[in-house]
Image 1 (spheres, rainbow, N blue to C red):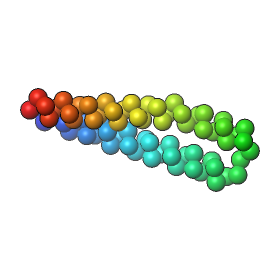
Image 2 (image 1 turned 45 degrees about the vertical axis):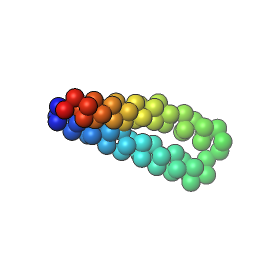
Image 3 (image 1 turned 90 degrees about the horizontal axis):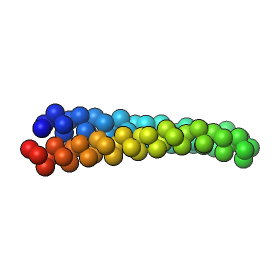
Length: 71
């Protein structure tokens, strides 16, 4: 079960890295001084990636918990 814990931790860290990337992408778009429609389009491009990153992080944390409970 130790491998499940480590794989879950790796997935959680990958999800966290993707979340940080999404934050930086939107922050950069806001600093660029785009119009409201351009900014909205930039944010809409990031939303699916943000959702996927959250999902990946949650799956990783669930794997860690399951690995701890089963070991």
